[in-house]
Image 1 (cartoon, rainbow, N blue to C red):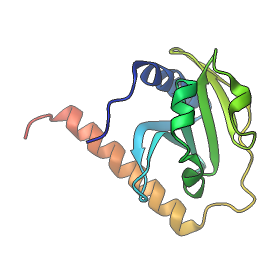
Image 2 (image 1 turned 90 degrees about the vertical axis):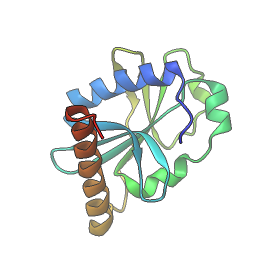
Image 3 (image 1 turned 90 degrees about the horizontal axis):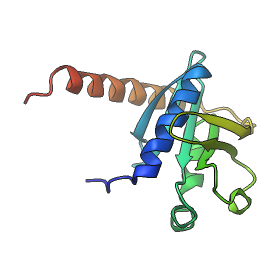
Length: 146
């Protein structure tokens, strides 16, 4: 079982998910990729573009977790999302950057477009996993019984 996320990360996820919705993305939190890695937020837009957002709730959280490059093979756009008071100068310059609070978020540095788009089979696999995860979660809400 996964370790519980801290309250700050949960609140930032809400703000980032709202922002993604305004940008036309439907998103899931705690989305597990085929690699076994769990993205904090994954979103898919109307065109099938896949965005992954890695939330860093504190400097200690960022320093203790350097697995973010492993997400790049599963998305078209990758962002870090951090609270407004985060020291952003310590973050790598390559990914996009989102400043967030519990209610909203703003992209302050766009994610670079990948020079090589996701391979069709990878895009299909991530999209199907996304759809199945969303359907499973909805089903649990509709019927929480055994």
